[in-house]
Length: 230
Image (tube, rainbow, N blue to C red; front, side, top):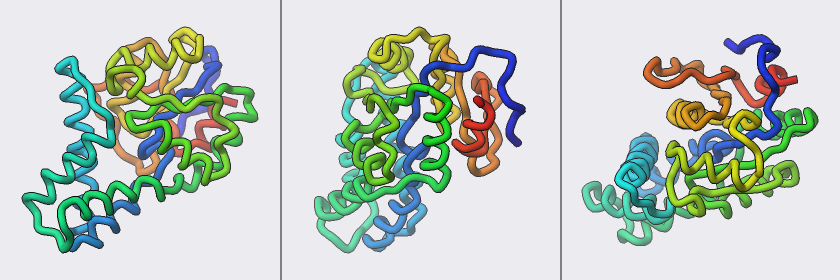
Protein backbone atom coordinates (compact mmCIF):
# COMPACT_ATOMS: atom_id res chain seq x y z
CA UNK A 1 0.00 0.00 0.00
CA UNK A 2 1.34 3.42 -0.88
CA UNK A 3 1.85 6.17 1.65
CA UNK A 4 0.11 9.54 1.73
CA UNK A 5 1.75 12.36 -0.17
CA UNK A 6 5.04 13.35 1.41
CA UNK A 7 4.51 16.45 3.52
CA UNK A 8 6.73 16.07 6.58
CA UNK A 9 10.11 16.44 4.88
CA UNK A 10 11.81 18.45 2.19
CA UNK A 11 11.20 17.05 -1.25
CA UNK A 12 14.47 15.94 -2.88
CA UNK A 13 16.04 17.98 -5.64
CA UNK A 14 17.63 14.93 -7.24
CA UNK A 15 16.30 11.43 -7.87
CA UNK A 16 18.97 8.76 -8.36
CA UNK A 17 17.50 5.72 -10.10
CA UNK A 18 18.83 2.21 -9.94
CA UNK A 19 18.67 0.76 -13.47
CA UNK A 20 18.68 -3.06 -13.44
CA UNK A 21 15.20 -4.28 -12.42
CA UNK A 22 14.11 -0.85 -11.18
CA UNK A 23 13.82 0.59 -14.69
CA UNK A 24 14.55 -2.47 -16.83
CA UNK A 25 12.35 -5.56 -16.93
CA UNK A 26 14.71 -8.53 -16.69
CA UNK A 27 12.02 -11.19 -17.14
CA UNK A 28 12.80 -11.71 -20.88
CA UNK A 29 16.22 -13.05 -19.87
CA UNK A 30 14.45 -16.23 -18.78
CA UNK A 31 13.69 -16.98 -22.43
CA UNK A 32 17.42 -16.76 -23.20
CA UNK A 33 18.09 -19.59 -20.76
CA UNK A 34 15.17 -21.56 -22.17
CA UNK A 35 16.75 -21.19 -25.62
CA UNK A 36 19.75 -23.05 -24.22
CA UNK A 37 17.65 -25.92 -22.90
CA UNK A 38 17.60 -24.73 -19.28
CA UNK A 39 14.57 -23.82 -17.11
CA UNK A 40 13.79 -20.13 -17.47
CA UNK A 41 13.85 -19.65 -13.68
CA UNK A 42 17.62 -20.25 -13.77
CA UNK A 43 17.90 -16.62 -14.88
CA UNK A 44 16.71 -15.42 -11.48
CA UNK A 45 19.21 -17.44 -9.46
CA UNK A 46 22.03 -16.55 -11.85
CA UNK A 47 21.32 -12.82 -11.56
CA UNK A 48 21.18 -13.03 -7.77
CA UNK A 49 24.49 -14.87 -7.80
CA UNK A 50 26.27 -12.30 -9.92
CA UNK A 51 25.06 -9.53 -7.61
CA UNK A 52 26.34 -11.53 -4.64
CA UNK A 53 29.76 -11.84 -6.22
CA UNK A 54 29.87 -8.13 -7.07
CA UNK A 55 28.99 -7.31 -3.47
CA UNK A 56 31.64 -9.76 -2.22
CA UNK A 57 34.36 -8.09 -4.25
CA UNK A 58 33.31 -4.68 -2.96
CA UNK A 59 33.30 -5.93 0.64
CA UNK A 60 36.85 -7.22 0.08
CA UNK A 61 37.98 -3.83 -1.21
CA UNK A 62 38.04 -4.87 -4.87
CA UNK A 63 35.79 -4.29 -7.87
CA UNK A 64 35.06 -5.67 -11.32
CA UNK A 65 32.74 -4.54 -14.11
CA UNK A 66 29.21 -5.95 -14.11
CA UNK A 67 29.61 -7.45 -17.59
CA UNK A 68 32.82 -9.23 -16.58
CA UNK A 69 31.21 -10.83 -13.54
CA UNK A 70 28.04 -11.65 -15.45
CA UNK A 71 29.89 -13.42 -18.27
CA UNK A 72 32.25 -15.36 -16.03
CA UNK A 73 29.41 -16.44 -13.72
CA UNK A 74 27.62 -17.76 -16.81
CA UNK A 75 30.71 -19.79 -17.69
CA UNK A 76 30.72 -21.27 -14.20
CA UNK A 77 27.00 -22.05 -14.45
CA UNK A 78 27.14 -23.54 -17.95
CA UNK A 79 30.11 -25.72 -17.03
CA UNK A 80 27.96 -27.45 -14.41
CA UNK A 81 24.68 -27.44 -16.38
CA UNK A 82 24.64 -28.77 -19.91
CA UNK A 83 23.40 -26.48 -22.65
CA UNK A 84 22.77 -27.17 -26.31
CA UNK A 85 25.48 -24.73 -27.49
CA UNK A 86 29.21 -24.26 -27.16
CA UNK A 87 30.18 -22.48 -23.96
CA UNK A 88 31.08 -19.07 -25.39
CA UNK A 89 28.09 -19.11 -27.75
CA UNK A 90 25.79 -19.77 -24.77
CA UNK A 91 27.39 -16.95 -22.76
CA UNK A 92 27.10 -14.52 -25.68
CA UNK A 93 23.43 -15.44 -26.18
CA UNK A 94 22.49 -14.52 -22.63
CA UNK A 95 24.65 -11.40 -22.48
CA UNK A 96 23.09 -10.11 -25.71
CA UNK A 97 19.74 -10.19 -23.96
CA UNK A 98 20.67 -7.18 -21.83
CA UNK A 99 20.76 -4.95 -24.89
CA UNK A 100 17.22 -5.90 -25.87
CA UNK A 101 15.50 -5.36 -22.53
CA UNK A 102 12.59 -2.98 -22.19
CA UNK A 103 11.32 -0.91 -19.28
CA UNK A 104 8.52 -1.79 -16.89
CA UNK A 105 5.03 -0.58 -17.92
CA UNK A 106 5.00 2.22 -15.33
CA UNK A 107 8.40 3.67 -16.22
CA UNK A 108 7.57 5.96 -19.15
CA UNK A 109 4.61 7.68 -17.51
CA UNK A 110 6.33 7.68 -14.13
CA UNK A 111 9.52 9.29 -15.41
CA UNK A 112 7.57 11.93 -17.32
CA UNK A 113 5.46 12.71 -14.24
CA UNK A 114 8.51 12.99 -12.00
CA UNK A 115 10.25 15.27 -14.46
CA UNK A 116 7.16 17.49 -14.53
CA UNK A 117 7.73 18.04 -10.81
CA UNK A 118 10.96 19.84 -11.77
CA UNK A 119 13.11 17.14 -10.20
CA UNK A 120 16.55 16.30 -11.53
CA UNK A 121 16.81 12.68 -12.69
CA UNK A 122 19.95 10.55 -13.03
CA UNK A 123 20.74 6.84 -12.95
CA UNK A 124 23.33 5.05 -10.86
CA UNK A 125 23.75 1.46 -11.96
CA UNK A 126 25.94 -1.44 -10.93
CA UNK A 127 25.91 -2.14 -14.67
CA UNK A 128 27.36 -0.06 -17.45
CA UNK A 129 26.13 3.37 -18.43
CA UNK A 130 25.90 2.22 -22.06
CA UNK A 131 23.23 -0.38 -21.19
CA UNK A 132 21.20 2.30 -19.40
CA UNK A 133 21.67 4.55 -22.44
CA UNK A 134 20.24 1.91 -24.77
CA UNK A 135 17.37 1.09 -22.42
CA UNK A 136 16.20 4.66 -21.87
CA UNK A 137 16.74 5.73 -25.48
CA UNK A 138 14.61 2.83 -26.73
CA UNK A 139 11.88 3.78 -24.26
CA UNK A 140 11.93 7.40 -25.42
CA UNK A 141 12.76 8.86 -22.00
CA UNK A 142 16.51 9.41 -22.25
CA UNK A 143 16.04 13.16 -22.54
CA UNK A 144 14.58 13.31 -19.03
CA UNK A 145 17.82 12.09 -17.41
CA UNK A 146 20.65 14.57 -17.14
CA UNK A 147 23.30 11.94 -16.43
CA UNK A 148 23.71 8.16 -16.59
CA UNK A 149 26.21 7.10 -13.95
CA UNK A 150 27.85 3.76 -13.32
CA UNK A 151 29.67 2.37 -10.30
CA UNK A 152 32.41 1.37 -12.72
CA UNK A 153 33.59 4.97 -12.35
CA UNK A 154 33.06 4.99 -8.59
CA UNK A 155 35.34 2.04 -7.92
CA UNK A 156 32.85 0.18 -5.75
CA UNK A 157 29.42 -1.32 -6.25
CA UNK A 158 26.26 -0.23 -4.53
CA UNK A 159 25.43 -0.50 -1.67
CA UNK A 160 28.87 0.75 -0.62
CA UNK A 161 28.95 4.27 0.77
CA UNK A 162 31.44 5.31 -1.89
CA UNK A 163 29.09 4.55 -4.77
CA UNK A 164 26.43 6.96 -3.52
CA UNK A 165 29.06 9.56 -2.60
CA UNK A 166 30.30 9.37 -6.20
CA UNK A 167 26.83 10.15 -7.56
CA UNK A 168 26.38 13.06 -5.16
CA UNK A 169 29.75 14.50 -6.14
CA UNK A 170 29.00 14.18 -9.85
CA UNK A 171 25.66 15.93 -9.42
CA UNK A 172 26.99 18.49 -6.91
CA UNK A 173 24.31 17.95 -4.28
CA UNK A 174 24.40 16.97 -0.63
CA UNK A 175 22.93 13.72 0.72
CA UNK A 176 19.88 15.47 2.17
CA UNK A 177 18.97 16.78 -1.30
CA UNK A 178 18.95 13.37 -3.01
CA UNK A 179 16.64 10.34 -3.05
CA UNK A 180 17.62 6.88 -4.26
CA UNK A 181 14.84 5.08 -6.16
CA UNK A 182 15.13 1.29 -6.33
CA UNK A 183 13.26 -2.01 -6.19
CA UNK A 184 16.06 -3.54 -4.12
CA UNK A 185 15.87 -3.19 -0.32
CA UNK A 186 19.66 -3.59 -0.10
CA UNK A 187 19.97 -0.49 -2.30
CA UNK A 188 17.53 1.69 -0.35
CA UNK A 189 19.22 0.57 2.87
CA UNK A 190 22.64 1.47 1.51
CA UNK A 191 21.42 4.89 0.42
CA UNK A 192 19.86 5.54 3.82
CA UNK A 193 23.15 4.68 5.54
CA UNK A 194 24.88 7.13 3.21
CA UNK A 195 22.53 9.91 4.31
CA UNK A 196 20.14 9.96 1.33
CA UNK A 197 16.40 9.54 1.47
CA UNK A 198 15.04 6.57 -0.43
CA UNK A 199 12.02 5.29 -2.31
CA UNK A 200 11.31 1.57 -2.47
CA UNK A 201 9.35 0.63 -5.60
CA UNK A 202 7.37 -2.45 -4.60
CA UNK A 203 5.62 -3.61 -7.78
CA UNK A 204 4.96 -7.13 -6.51
CA UNK A 205 3.57 -6.50 -3.00
CA UNK A 206 6.66 -7.94 -1.33
CA UNK A 207 7.61 -7.62 2.33
CA UNK A 208 10.40 -5.19 3.17
CA UNK A 209 13.09 -6.89 5.31
CA UNK A 210 13.09 -5.60 8.89
CA UNK A 211 16.88 -5.81 9.14
CA UNK A 212 17.30 -3.01 6.58
CA UNK A 213 16.70 0.65 7.30
CA UNK A 214 13.19 1.47 6.10
CA UNK A 215 12.77 3.56 2.97
CA UNK A 216 11.48 7.10 3.21
CA UNK A 217 8.73 6.30 0.72
CA UNK A 218 6.99 3.05 -0.19
CA UNK A 219 5.59 3.20 -3.74
CA UNK A 220 3.74 0.68 -5.88
CA UNK A 221 5.17 2.15 -9.09
CA UNK A 222 6.98 5.19 -10.43
CA UNK A 223 3.64 6.85 -11.15
CA UNK A 224 2.67 6.27 -7.53
CA UNK A 225 6.00 7.79 -6.45
CA UNK A 226 5.29 10.89 -8.54
CA UNK A 227 1.91 11.28 -6.85
CA UNK A 228 3.50 11.04 -3.43
CA UNK A 229 6.16 13.59 -4.23
CA UNK A 230 3.79 16.08 -5.86
